Structure formats: structure tokens, C-alpha cells
Length: 265
Image: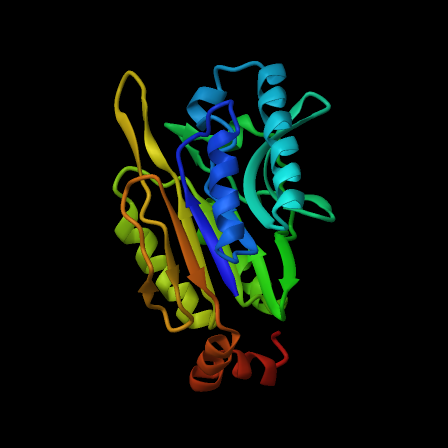
């Protein structure tokens, strides 16, 4: 099973670049494509200065484009998106296919003083965990926004629902790469699953600091090993997913077997 990660900065208004990448994915036999956070929309700090009308129009234009390309190239496209509904703004992740569109809101939002998505977006705080889930060619995929990786309950729920490949669009910056690497390698090993982390590139300048999004998109296998990584430039990564590798990891480590014996999952 071939999956592609598009490591990009915020896309321009024109869809020519997006079209070229998705056409290339189709020619390479890819069926699942993942975009990073704040690629369809401008970065969060810029969104804070935009009107809701402008944000809604920006998202509408990209949603129409992804719907078109998913049908044209027979792709499943996973992409974070900002939604404006009834004068409220939500941070979500979308799945675009030939059959239609599905959106799921992010579970947890950054709430730091210098980066407070929690105060800006209107996502409902719920006691249940939700994420995009779909099956393709006998493999179960789950997709979550980047900040959700820090919360155990998200991973517990994915294990309960039999997810084998986790797609993680992110917008990581400020030299957090080593921390992210260790978190995700541990999650992959302990849960016997693939993790495809797709990080944004580019920069944002404010009055106090330079925000540099470092990329380093990569695949982690079910044994917790990073493979097929990119650097910090705009680039396309195409990887192969092997269900038998997931099964092998489960059989060797037997972590989930113990959970099933105790009726925990």
C-alpha cells in the first residue's frame, strides 16, 4: 500500500502546485495522501488577524479543490482545515474521497501564552475522543492533528478501534524535533502501529521571534524505528505500508494480547 506525505508551507491561492503534486502521487500508484497543518490555511498567528469571512472563503476554496482532485486522481486526501460555521471557527481534519468529505474536530488545542489555539477556536471540549478512521485494502487508518499525540487517551482509543496506521499532520517549530521523535517512536512501538508524521515547512515572523517550521516528515514502523525521513525543504515523500509488519510486531511484543486477555480492549 503506497502512501504519500506532502511537506509544504501554506499553499498559494492558485491550485497549480497542489495539482502537480497530487497528479504525481496518482502516477506513482499512491492512494492515500497526507498534508501538514496550516497548509490549506495560513498559519494560526496570521489567522488571528483575519476576518471570519476571509477565513471561510480561504477554506471553501481549498475544500472545493481537494474534493475535485480526490475525484480526478482517485485519491484519499487527509488534510487539516479551519472551518467557519454559524460564526464560529473550528480546527479540524478532513478526509476527501471520491465518495465525499468528512470532517472531525481536533480533540485538544494548544493553550500556551504565545500560541493559544484553545482561546481562538470554538472546538467543543468533550469527554470522548474522536478521530478520522477509515479502511483501505485491509488496513485500518486513523488521522489526528499534531497536538493530540501528547494525550494517552487518544492512543488508547485508537488501539481499541484497531488502528494500524496513524497519520499525524503537524506544525512543529522551535526545535522540538527530538522530543517529537521520542514520543512517536514510543507510541509506534508500544501500540504496534505505523506512524506517518507530516510536518510543515516555511517560516513566520512576528515582532519577537522567527517561527521556523522544520519539516522532517517521516514514517515510523511498528518496531519504533524511523525510516524514509525528509529534511527541511518542500518535498514529497512516498512510502509503503505492509500489514504483515504490523502483525509481526503484535506477535513479537504481545502488548495488545495482554490487554485483550484482561478485557481492556
